[in-house]
Image 1 (cartoon, helix red, strand yellow):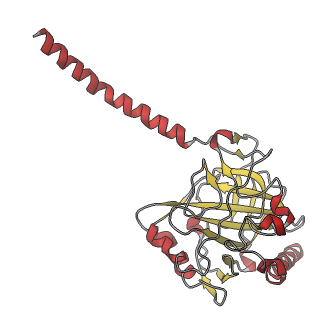
Image 2 (cartoon, one colour):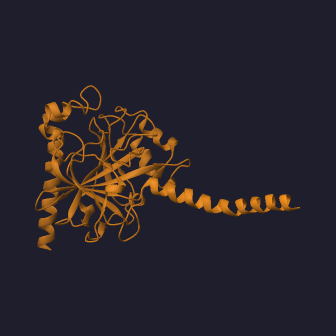
Image 3 (cartoon, helix red, strand yellow):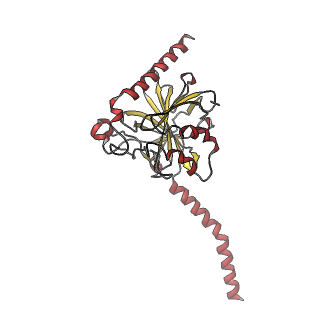
Length: 306
């Protein structure tokens, strides 16, 4: 009981410290995504020109399958969370959602040294439905990306869980509640406390597939030594639903991909590249065409020999 109380105090202190830094650090108002955009960040924030920067383009052919990666545990994320009241606000760069302290949402496994607790999650979007994500896979951009920022209680280390969205024709009804809240949080003058269930954003399988690499914050001060976990499963979203971000005071907020340098990207599964997918489909198509070819050959021989 006493140990649980101490852990809750540490979590509340970490959350308070994170919020204070976000709102009082003078550097947070010295950058944006347009006039003072990503090209200018390295000139004003030293870490932004480091060699372990995020986001990156994940090249499937270079991803290393690591059989030693422990399963990723999404602690509390896959349960019904309608009872949790989240605080949504706009910090001038993105829409941020802060969880209630007692939610105790966390991630563990994936070779993380300890349990990492959720501090906040936020969004990255683009001008249109064909861009917006910060991470790309084989050069492919996605329309939206959510970052779930976690922090370890004892070491203070950070880990970010990323979820990418796939464009589809029909609405994803499971995210309508979330989008309705985001539609109200378009600028810094609005803050909303609302119950929301985000469990549909997460895979229900006990051991989801993921990519893992060492990177940085994707916005100033671009702090490095951040563990990145990108889920391989994507969430569907329609062009109509993406219009939620059209009227936002920030028209886009994604940083271009950074050089990988000597870093390695690992995965707990054997991913298949889009090129391999295309090759498989092409081979299947050829196989399906063989009977038709034989039929045509038989017909020609019949006409010749008749």
